[in-house]
Image 1 (tube, rainbow, N blue to C red):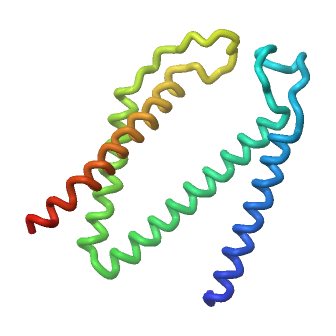
Image 2: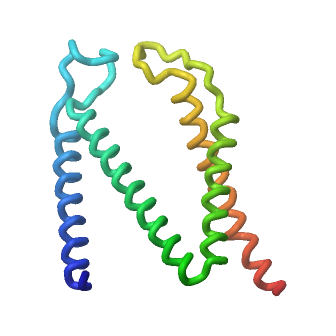
Length: 159
């Protein structure tokens, strides 16, 4: 695939994504409110097109994760041909990430929450533990990032 074709394809994809996002956000912010008889909690503001916005966010997240995984797999096999030792070290990082997520999930609390006015099906142990897993993993990654920012310069000076 030539560079020009790749540039045109990525530019078109970006523009389509931006246009759809602008339309969805305009619907969300300018589309009015849900009628009173359809609201979950009567005294709260609820935009009419909240579902469309959430579905668009889910679609963007799914596309991002799929592309990320595809590029990671392609990069792994490319590096495996060039330098197997580096490829395996990258694979160990993925194993460490998976271990962190599993540990964070097992530490999470699955006790159902008492949410007044909520009658949905998401207040179950699995969803709550998954939410805790993402929160704990964000905290761990934040701490590791801060350590890398502040500790790595000192380690490089000692070398």
